[in-house]
Length: 116
Image (cartoon, rainbow, N blue to C red; front, side):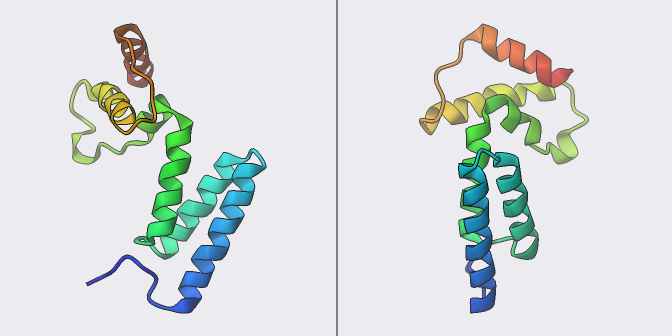
């Protein structure tokens, strides 16, 4: 069973070094670069908790609508009204203390934007 941690010290060092690069990019105002670094680390080590956590923080900072756009609906993508995921994302941001309460007009506008 996987513990979620890199199984060898070389992998752990690569993850740590990559996260330092990601943090430097974020602090320099290049969050997209930081996200690319995290995603590359996760391709190598998909269950690395530090990389997963850092990527989650980067995505949280992007905002609710961008987060909703990134959600892969998988087998449900063909279902109608997939834009309702925006309301769910807003609720999660609110529940975890990272978003302000959203009014109905904002939600509807973002749902329309996602629906295209």
